[in-house]
Length: 627
Ligand SMILES: Nc1ncnc2c1ncn2[C@@H]1O[C@H](COP(=O)(O)OP(=O)(O)OP(=O)(O)O)[C@@H](O)[C@H]1O
Image: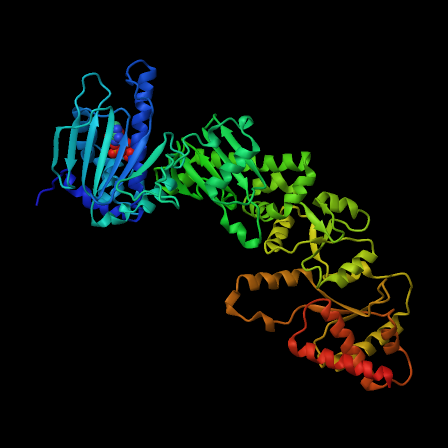
């Protein structure tokens, strides 16, 4: 067979099944497409009017009307925009399946990009066929002497065009809803969809429901419904920031996010050059840690809603905030993988990040007490941002607040300078103030404070800070404390010390029945503490990490921890143990076990069995006291 070349031909018969199948999951998008076509038509006629090329004939009260008639099973979209002549219908509506065919064919390969054909290849109007078996257009062009035209098509390849009925400028699109679109005969669905996609479209959108039973008051009088548009044609974010009041920002927040808690503060984004971007980002108030997941950034393109939380455009950590961003410059109709690699998208994302960091810095500098008040709510966000984005970390590093055990809020720099002379680039931290109170007290006695890091994100966050500042080391209050608390005042007889140490070690190992017990004798400054347990910072973190990643499905409770029992040789009980003379074996055992349990309690909760033994033994000791 000889080699042949040829072009594949695409016919409009193919297009309807494809539209219906591909766009099925985003069926409601047809409402966005038809209403935004109506808005475009109004914008066009307004522009022509301002150029002196169109006469509005006093019909300048622009709006889009959506009329639902459940009985007739129709949904109408009516605008008083530019309208179309027969010629324009032929050009823009009838030929569309062919004019965009080449691009469309290219896209055909990539089935993942469902809704993105819409708006890209001029198929917006045809999305009506996702829910309608027949669509009619009745339109009258703004042009002098134009005649009304009626177009209709039942979803096949044939259309009819005849004289229309419209007497005023504009377009009326009627959808005869088919079986696949019945949910769009419900007022609730229509209202919800308009609110979802069209909240900020530039002209008022009204919903009219035919044959609706009128609302009545308690005396049976009909209440005339208040005629209000469903959208906000001039959303606050389009205004100049210094013309907006706090009340307006709060009101906008309440309406847009149906959140009746007051936002903490907000950032009005307003950029014209080198790209166009407007929006408002709100820092919401949190009630608990889980609330952080509620964030929502709505992305708009020229007041038309595109989607929530598009990670490719908005840095992921900002998705913890609530806000709207309108960016007409974004190529939102292209694939997401393209967005990820697009230079302008990166610039936009950097711009937003910088604006957020600037706002936080400005609050820190000029309103530190407010900033401190907000800190609990914003800290998971700032920390998450610092983990996700190095640039952001650099921008906010100096304004991250740490609460201390002295109930102060300080930056890292302030902490280190307050500890100067006592600590060198070390930061002590507590993860549980109650549980670790013994250690905190010991630090306090040495005039040292710890910072409190008790949020789930903190362990990853401090590792990040350490990675970025090699000199800084975070140490939990129960780790490697002994060096610090050691009282190396008196010189000692090394030989005697060794013997004593061995003696005590034997007593403890025997009493606890643990040969693997790590034990160290130190002279602590504080002589009312007999023993404390410390845990190497590094091995503890390693274990936490393994636990977090659930490595190998192991049960980590059985892994021995790298604990060391530090015994205070200055304490009376230890002095007794080390002393010469006959001692009651049973008493030594009780004391050793009790010292160990008390040290453990200040470190972590006892297991149920250990707790039971501890209580029994405590009673036994008290009984001995009175006998
Ligand atoms: N309500 C309307 N009034 C006037 N012209 C309209 C109206 N609806 C559609 N048109 C014309 O039909 C054309 C095709 O509409 P369609 O929605 O399919 O594509 P588009 O608007 O060009 O692109 P998109 O897919 O982004 O909506 C429009 O460009 C416009 O010229």
